[in-house]
Structure formats: C-alpha cells, structure tokens
Length: 285
Image 1 (cartoon, helix red, strand yellow):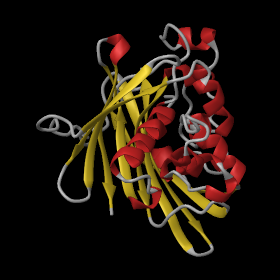
Image 2 (cartoon, rainbow, N blue to C red):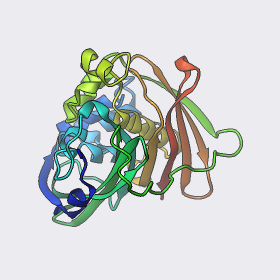
Image 3 (tube, rainbow, N blue to C red):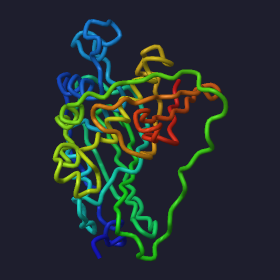
Image 4 (cartoon, one colour):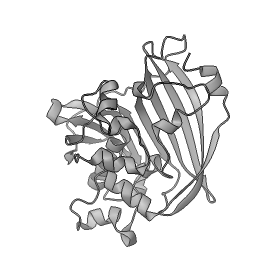
C-alpha cells in the first residue's frame, strides 16, 4: 500500500536547520499580494527594509523548504503528487517572527486518517531558535484514492457558521502571475504552474497555492481589523474548502467573535461564491 500508517507514525522526527533574511520575507509578502499601492505607508511595512514587519503566515515558507512535495518525502508515504491537496493549516505563534532568523524545525507525522475514498496525513512542525520556540505548525494533506485501509476517520474540523452579518467584507485581486511569484518562496509543486500536470490532477488550469490564499487572507485581517499590527496574531487556522485560480478575486468576510477572536470565510465571487477558505479563525492579543 502506498501509505503505511504504522511506518509513517513510527518514523523519528526530521530535524532541519533553516535560515531566512529580509529579502525572503519581502519576496513572501509580494507573493501574497503586498506592495499595492507600492508607496502606501501601510504596504511599506511589508516591502521596505527599514520598515519591515513579518506577516506570521511567513512561517509556512520560512527557510525556503519544498512545501508539500518535501513533506511527502517521509517513511511510509509513497503517493502520486497529482492526488495530493493541502487540506488545512493551523499556525500557533509563540512570539513575533524576527526579520533575520536561524532556527531548527522538527517535523513528524502525527496521524493518518481513513476517509474512505481518501487518506488524510496530519503532520506537526515545531520551530525554535536559540531563544526558544518560535511557532508550531499543524497541517493536513488530503490524498485522493488512498483511503479504505481500515483506519479511523479522525476528528471533524467543521465549525458552526458565523452568526449575523460580517463586520467587514473586502476583496483582494489575485494576479495572473501570483502562483508563479509565490512558488519562488519554496513550494515548487507543478500543480501551480504546469497546465498539463494541473489537468492530470483534475483541474482546468494551474491553481493558486492554498497557502497563498491563506497568506492573502491573514494579511487582509491584519490590515483591516488589527490596525496593521502583525505581532497581535497569536494563532491562525483554515480549512482549504476549495481552490482559487490566478486572475480571480478573493472575497473575504470577517466577523469579530468576542474578545480576541475573528472568524473568516473566503470565496470566489467570479464562480458564484465558490468556497476557498472555510472554518477559518484568527486569535489575537
């Protein structure tokens, strides 16, 4: 069987040294739509060296790792990349991410769930530098056609829908070259650039990285409801409910839910409001 749950769970954690510098942060910010308008003081916080702040979602690419492709290079996992989609992402910040960094990342498979027609591989990555923990990242990879092995279905991540009208609704345009720019931060999955590969995976054309939508959405929350203060973000979770395509628009609806929590839903208005991010929340201080 391409996925051997026992072998994957028994494998020792992988430890990887990672480094980053301001240009890596700036490239990531451009990849999630920062810098428009280029001279806006609010955008210069993401693009100009002497103003630079790190959007917490940068943690998902810090070190320029190979993204989903690299996470599949693990004992007990041998699957067709065209069958893999990113299912969800949760990020917990232990302190603000520095502009320059040198850290160690420790990653392990924490569960393999059986959804019947698909398998879900859950992984956890802990990142720390010389001063202690920086962030914890939990993510799920959805592998079509690899279920049915008799495992547990795993917990549901579905949340009740937000109540009432959203406090803010904003739209963010996705550039035609957004995926090509974003993939320079490390995730070179051909699904986001190669039309032939995208068709083999069941899509009409290359799709935007789920984590690019994830970054675009967090930036919108920070800019509109958190006064542009990236350090206020404590944790951030999203389920990738659908896809976005380069050239489309993301519509982002936000609800304040008591002190310190924001709910978010992202949809594609050009496709009749098709869901992109669901069961999404930001906790802040």
